[in-house]
Image 1 (tube, rainbow, N blue to C red):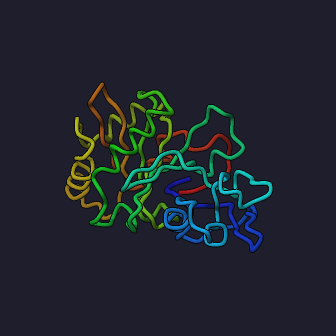
Image 2 (image 1 turned 120 degrees about the vertical axis):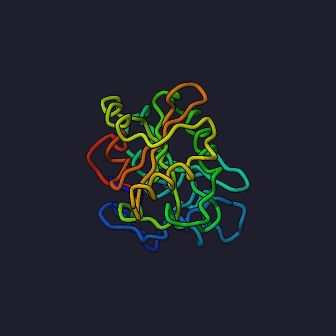
Image 3 (image 1 turned 45 degrees about the vertical axis):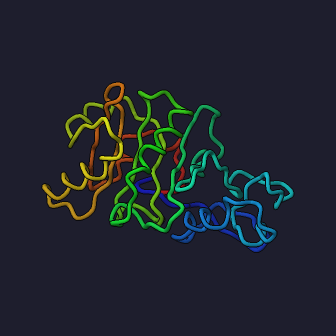
Length: 227
């Protein structure tokens, strides 16, 4: 699981998905650009992973569709493929910018994506369980910035505490805290994890490995998904 990419996906002309192929690294960008707005007359031919509500597929399977959870002018949140086949109480979502922004290394990364991600996550999970995660550039397979909305592993809290690089009451400061810590440690590539320490107080963790894999319940069973 390390960063975030569609594994186990293959788009075929009939718009079905085969479960043992690696999706192109632009799959998330394609979803943002072609699969969010269902009003286009050519939606079903342009979108490789359509929303069920669009009626593009006769028998829409979880892996062949996208489920949009929330949207505003800048961002969209959706179900991660890792939720397919999982119990109803398992949660793994993604929050993405609508603009083309590659990832943690992109100077255009938006500060407000963290507050958007938190609002979506807290509508689906208890605040004390939430982890917001962006994986390092070398630990992802999708080249569109995406924040994982997942649950923490309770047993990793002590490890997170030892790797804490800052605290903030303003989620808009997360990128700045993470970048300063990475610069001090001479880390050219890093992942970021944000979690709630207390009400209106958030902790920031960075890692050169995948925070998703280290600290969170990213999967309900041992299978691959988006990184």
